Length: 612
Image (tube, rainbow, N blue to C red; front, side, top):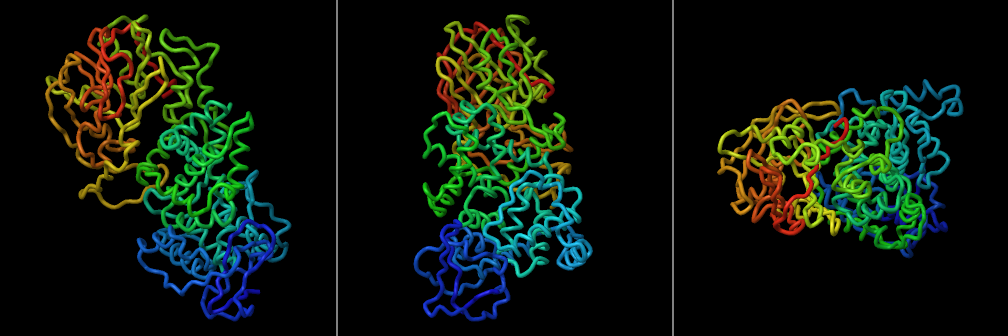
C-alpha cells in the first residue's frame, strides 16, 4: 500500500532507529497522480526514523540538462522527496548508453515466470557472484527482500559472465526503494550493468575487476590520504585486505541516508564519486580515531557504520568533492593497468593477493644501500600493480662498477626501476622511475629529452624518510585535462579494448642535457607513445595541459649524466662516473634537496620488480 499526498514528501534520516513517521498536519495521505508516486511499497516504513517536523519543499521539475541534474544531486535537492528522486533516477538511467540487447522489463516477466512460476523462490539459490557477500536490504519489507533475491537470480540467468559482484545486492536494494515493480528495477539494474559509456563503470562484475578497483583505490589513497595510508601500512599486517573493503564501506557499512545521497551523484558521475567518498571516509577515520592496537579493518567498518556520530552527510560529501581527483579517463587507465598486472600474475578467479609489503622477504633481502625494512616502506609507495612483485637487483656499483654505460646496459628493458643512492655522508635518497631507460635513445646526437610519466617520484630515506610525488598530484588546479585529438573518432572502451592511435607526439627541441649539475635544467622533449596499439600510460604527459614544460621533467639521460626532475633545479643529477651528484628543489616534484646538495656517491643500486 502506498500512501501519498499532493504535498507529502517522505522525509528521511534513515538509520533504522526507533520507528517514527512524519506525515502532513492533516495526517491524511491522498492519492497522487504522479507516475512515480507508487514507488515505496517494497519498504518497511516502520524501520525508518525521521527528523522532527515535516519539511515541505515546492514542486521542482526534473531538468533535462545533465549539468543541472548534477548540481541538484550534489545539493541534495530531492533528498526529502522520494517521488522526485524516483523521477530523477528514471530519467538518469534512461539516458545511460547501454548495449543493444540489454534485458528489459518484458524479459524479466518471461524469465521470472519460467524460473519461479511453479516452484517459487525456495528452489532457486542465489547466483554464485554474490557468494559470501553482504546482502544489505536497507529497511525493505519481506516483499522487497524477496523481490531483490528474484532480481539477482534473474541477473545470474541473463548475465552468466558475471562471476563476482559484491556490490550488486546493495544496488538492487537501493533501486527497489524507487521502483514501481520488480520488472522496472530489473530493467534499471541491467542498464547499469550493460553501460557502454567511455571510462565509466557502475558495477564491477568479476573478481579480477573488483581486485583491480581495490588496487586503484590503494593507489589513490597513497596520493590523497598519505597519512592514513602510512598509518594502515604501518599497523596492518595485510593492508591490501583493508583497501579491498572500500566498496563495501559504501554499499554495506554506510547508513542508508548517507549512501542514498552518494548514490544520487554516482548515477550521474560514475565510480569517480565512490573513490572520492571512500577517500573522505579514510580521512575522517584518521581524524576521529585513536589507534590502540585494534584490528584496523574491523575498526574502519565500525567507524563507517557510525559515521553519523562524527560528520553529517552534507559535510562528508563536501569533503569528498573537495578532493581533486584525476579525470575519469586517468582513473580508468590506472584501473586497466592494475587489471593487466593482476591478470599477468595469475589472478583471474576468486583468490587473495599477497600484501604489498610482504613482497620484500625480510630474511633473504640484502642490499648495500637500504635495509629490508626501508625497502618495504619504499615498496609501499610504488604503484599497487608493481608492489605485487618482489624487488630484484638490476645494477650495483659494488658488483658492476661505477659506469653510466653499464648502468644503462643493466637497466634497459625493465620498467619501472627504483634508484637508490648512498652518499659518503651515509645519507640515502633515490627515485621511482616509471619508464624504460631505452626511451632516451629516441633522440640522438645533441638532443636530449625528458620522458616518463606522472607516476615518477623522488624520495629521501636517511636521515628522514619521505617521498615527493609529481607536483600535479599535490596541485591539480594547475592543469587541465587535455582535449581529445580532432583526428580521433568517438569510440567506446571495454575491458580488453585497445586504443586507436592518439595524438601525434609534440616535440620540443632543446639543447643537450647538461653534463654537469651547474648547467641549466630547463629543457624538454615531451614523450610520444611507444606503441600506438597499446593502452596509453596512466598519468601520461599528453593527457594534461601543463602551464610549463618544467612540470613534466621526470627523467632524462645521455652519455654524460642522468637527471630526475627539472625546472628551477634538478631533484637528482648524477655524472657519467656515478661518482658526483647534486640535488636541488625542482618544479616537477616540488621537493626540497633530498640530501646534502652536492654529494659524493658511496654506493648506487637500481632495483626492478621481478616479472614486471
